[in-house]
Length: 133
Image (cartoon, rainbow, N blue to C red; front, side):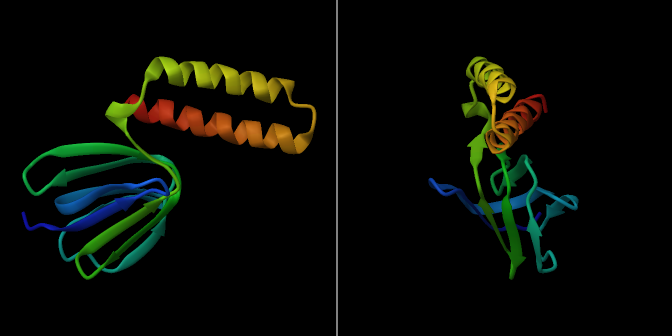
């Protein structure tokens, strides 16, 4: 297969920059695979896992929460709101965070506080679901 350039960036850091064979992108309109010579496209990301294979055959999986993907001129750029390598996630810590977030939702008095807590809980559950892949 032919390779193309891929950059995955979060606000904290550049998580990957290099040649890849393929990338599966979780967009709000459904997952799509990018290969060399893909048509130009810009898509909003939904929480999910970006799967990619580098040009040496190594496979990686990163959880992303929101952001944008841009494909143009054999370059895919993902600007993620948050991105975490699946192997870096600690399931015990994640379970504790989910429990605490559930308590925050139950304890919230004001609607805006409850909404923020519910959004955080949903994000944590999305990460947990991604871990089961």
